[in-house]
Structures are given as structure tokens and as C-alpha cells.
Image (cartoon, helix red, strand yellow):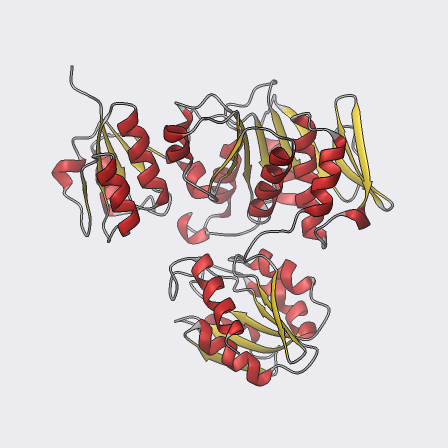
Length: 446
């Protein structure tokens, strides 16, 4: 009997992991990438004896697949993807594929903002509790690669809307939806409902045995929940009201309730400041209670967690000017949180690949807090158009080094230079991490 043929599209972290898992499970695997594959990833493919091609796709080697695993960065309207669909070959995500072979308990987190911090904090808590846990998805190593090469009792998985798009039978044990604000609309035909539908795929297949953790203060989430039927245990987190189950604020304390157990601590003890981080910590604390982590471990974790790289990361203070790396702020809402948290005048570095952004919600904040806007992108026309009458000065640059040099020139003692781009990084950088690293390096060279 012939082996099932699995074709993997994309030779990045996700694709390599899928190819390795397919090989380990005895499938006939072929990987194809339209660009160049990194040397380290090639070495992995060769190590596992997986045939591959780069810098182009051979259609005949792809259209004979029984199933295709598509990397999340490849859009649904890609011509090859459309051709695969025309040939009625099933296309799934790495997460869907790896989930078939994984028996671990899965805590899955999505949302427009806050998912990386929340994912990292939950992982930190579970590690502190001594549990055998892996970190995967949009953060850490490929989920499929870990399923192929390691054995964990728990996974904490960050899921982007792109990863959720290709999921059908996969099921979380704890599904967490942080919030939904406009993002990636260029991938969803500029239809907000399409993006909302993608995010809500995290709830698919949940039964009354599983938990759905969500922000009750998020209007889009609340509206969608009114339209659908969910049998999972609903555990809201809110800063506005008390709840019977979930997390809430009462005066100066955070409370978490799950079944018959309640945990509380003073908000001033929390390691991460800011309203948005309070939501992140509430969601993480609920997940910890569901997993039955000891209250002492929850408390110590919430007090000691240091946050994540590229998210409001303080880099250096140079000549009484603080430089902050918020490169992970790839949408308007994330930048809003960053600007809202600023207590000093701001020199703001923004720009990149616009995803159909509506900047209007930033207007008041920018008027009140930003002195200088530095546009770091190849096409800055929209930023100029939106903010020309709201800041004293707008300057265009095309590199992180130039952005920092201009910021250094215009920043005054007591200012904050904030890299919070609002946009994707792909016009000038490999990814948001590369953008943040180049920014930090330029600051260190001042």
C-alpha cells in the first residue's frame, strides 16, 4: 500500500516542523518553498532525509499530494493555493496536523493583542509549578516539531488568525480569546466579520468538559458570543463587574474564581503595569486555576514575571531620554495601549506595511502626547495624511538606524522614544523581532 503523500508549503519554522512530524509518522513528505530556505532549516530537512525544493514550486510534485500543510504566512488567495483547492486536495495548518498526534492538554491563546504576553505568562506559571510543559504556536519552537521530537503533558500554544484558519478537528482544553480589534484585514477581504470568524475558530469542537476564557469587556467578543451556541464552561475576565466564575477587580484587588475555589491578590503586587497587562494577567490566572496550580505559585509567578521581548521593552536611557522597544505592536490597538501608557512627551517611531489600518482612535493620544513622528516604512503617505495636523514634525526614514539617529536629534531630556509601529514589518525587515533587534542595536550604538 502506498504511503500517504504529504506536501508542506513553506520552509519556515512551521513548515519544517510539519515536514519532520510527517516523516517521523511514516508519510511520504515533500516540502516546497517559493523563496530560499535558511541554512539551519535545510540542515534539518537533510538530517531527516526529507526531499525539498526552494526558489520555486514544481506543480506536478505538489498536485499529487493527498494532503497539504500550508504555512500560516501564505495567503488563501495565493495562486498555487487556489490551484490546490481546484484539485480538491485538503489544505490544513501545522496546528491541525500536529494535533492529530498529540495527547497533551492544550491551553490555546488567541486575540488581536496581548496573546504573546498571556501565553508566556501561562507557560511561566506552569513551569514554576513543576509541570512538564511545552511552548508552541506563534511563539517558541514549532508545535509539530515538538510533537515529533519531544513528549509533554501540557502545551501552551499561541495562535494567530492565520493558524486558526486551517484548523478543523483540533480542539483546545482551555481556549482563551483576549480581544478582537481590527487587524490583518488585508488578509480577510477587508471584512471585519471574516477576521472575527477566524478568531472564533478557537472555540470550535469545545464541549462542556472544556473551558472558554474571554474578555467580557471586549464589545466585539460579547456581540459574537450572543450569536453562537457554546457548551464549554465560560470563564470571563473583566475590569468592570464582579463575576461568579472567572476573574474581576474589586477595589484594589484581583479575584479569580473557578468552581468552588477563589484566589485574590493586591493589584499593586502584579509585576506587569498597565490596564492591558491587567487583562493579560487575569486570563493567565484563570488558566492556572483551571489547571489546579497552587495559589502560592500563581502569586509568586504574577509578582515575578518580567514580560516579553519587543513589547514595551525598556532598552536604555541616553541623555535622560528613555528608549522603548514595542516592535510587537503591529496594529493600531497595540500602539494605542503603548501610547496610553506613556507619561512623558513622546518621539514616536511608526510605520511599515499597512494592513488596512484606521488610525482615528489614536488621534487624541497623538495630539496630547507625541511631539515628533518618525515614519519608518517604504510607504508613509497614510501616516502623513492622518497625523500632519497632530504633531509638530514628521520625518521619513527607511532603517532602524536612521530612525534612532533622528530620534536622538529631536528628543529632549525627559522624553520617551517609542518604537510602536502600528504596522507589519515586512517592507523593511524580516519580521517584528528583526525590527526590534535592529532598533535596540541602534540605541546601544548611540
